[in-house]
Length: 193
Image (cartoon, rainbow, N blue to C red; front, top):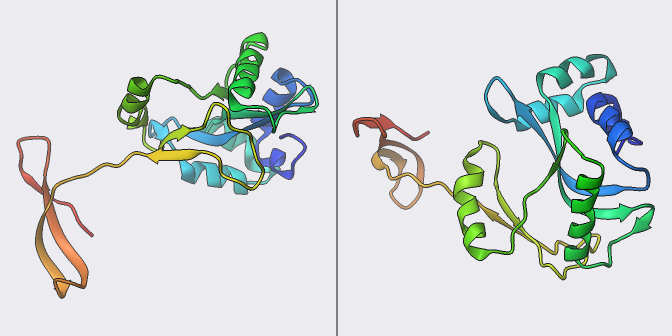
């Protein structure tokens, strides 16, 4: 991670990698930024940090801390692990987290083999704005470059609305005006473009 040009815009992650991670390691995961003012994940802040040159990077790192959410271990002690099953790679990176007492910005994505618990996650874990859903990987799956061997189950929120007016025809509406009941007192509130 810290051998890339992006290290210039992420000095906090470079420092954490040098201090906490052993050499010969390649992690797979997702970089996220937490907006402390908004209390949510912020893709906009992540983009802003990525586009910032070295001079302004430290200020943005303090304002918008970055975290690396680890989902897989691809190399350990210089040994490639791509052909090993996910369950084995997962056990290795769980022990990596405990042996090295990894803390922020390194985050170990939670994992379960319990279907009931997995069904709860789209509702309970994705309440945070910016979390899109859950990732499903087969325990015996290999990591094949260029091949997506996993499934993402996205959270879907629905709202019932009343369409008040449309422009265009009923079969080819170009725009609409709608209203939805709010949670407070059941009154209607505008809810469309």
